Amino acid sequence: MRVLFIGDVYMKLGQKAFDKYFLQVKNDYKPQFIIVNGENIEQGNGLSKKIYKDYLLQGVNVFTLGNHAFSRRDAKEVLDLDYVCRPANYGEGTTGKEWVEYNFNDKKIVVINLLGRIFMRDPIDNPFTKADEILKKVKADYIIVDFHAEATSEKYALAHYLDGRVDAIIGTHTHVPTADNMVLPKGTLYQSDVGMTGAKNSIIGGEIRQGIRKFISGVPERIKPEEKSNLQFNATMLDLDNKTIERINIYEENY
Ligand SMILES: [Fe+2]
Ligand SMILES: [Fe+2]
Image (cartoon, rainbow, N blue to C red; front, side, top):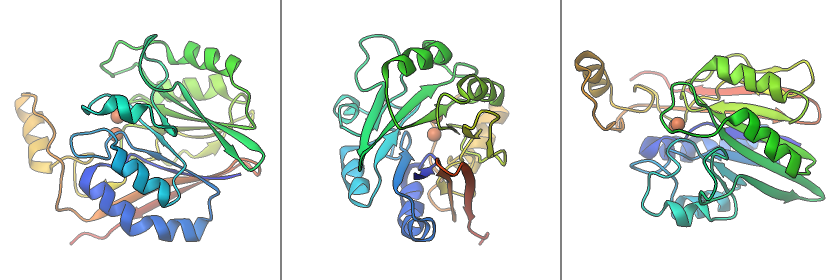
């Protein structure tokens, strides 16, 4: 099973980078199944119905989300869509799905999205015990986890905790791709962070001047997305049967 996992598509330039490189990457790598982290895909964060429909038509199979899953006014409707997977470790009664099941020919693929707790704001449940709980309930041929977290230590701990119990654990959220794509000892494919798709010259997608100002002053400001930069497209290609994991990092040259 060849799976393409595309990292956080960040707002307008994320969509632009997706439009520019998706087809090329699809043709080059020939994935059978495509996951996109869409937590920042729309202006103001979150995923919209329009993007969902549009990307599904282009061949995307499942969207995962993150800490911005609930940022939009229409979040409830979006979270109810069939192939949208929100972070599972929010409390009981939270709208949306704790995992998404997808029937691919005669195989069942399960996609799980979990949020980390280190340096993250929401008072969420433990991702380790939540993973145990879900894995007791699901039966699948392939299980892929998007671990949306800030700290690489937490990512490695969850990766080794789930090694051999899921097929792949791909990190998201930092927007910076790591070079540690590997096969863990018990066979699970792993990368700490897949990186983002969007503005290359930015502070993880945000405007540079504003980002610097915020760190100098310490005064919080709502992030202004960078809208003029050249682009980056970051993804990871997984072969779940042959146990290979390859990074795809497209960085456009500077002006
Ligand atoms: Fe993100
Ligand atoms: Fe995030």
